[in-house]
Length: 164
Image (cartoon, rainbow, N blue to C red; front, side, top):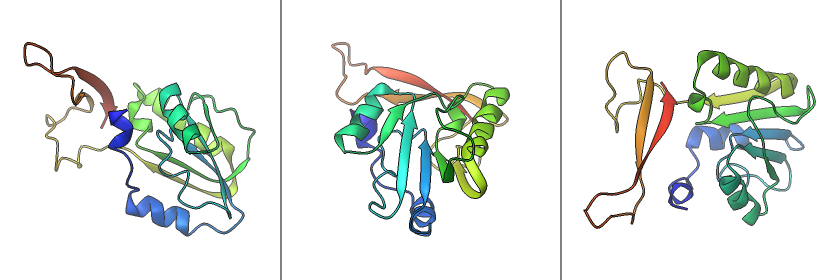
């Protein structure tokens, strides 16, 4: 799966966040994708991954990560269950402000009092590689499938929703 192949290198700030957690911490990676953060620190912390994509969860399982398919708006965890939670490049895919707020509330619901949460989302300030129309916050970003060149020379392209 090409999408997963392009997401293998942990972002340094997230790697630092996970490295700095105390031993024995229990955490959730909501929107874990292919699980690149699930295996950063094994043995002394436990991280459970969830994602809405069955295909990405299959990739996580092949790597022996603890994970399940789940909706980020209705996580299958009890209140105050985790010492930390991360949601990296996931919340911006929810299509309304209400749904993004619900996703943030779910992260806080599963976090124990005094727990730590880290959320990263795309922003309009991140325009080094992509140029977005000024003032646009709801955009479709093309994903070109490598090796999908058709007889007419075109490539298969999927549009991915982002709120910036």
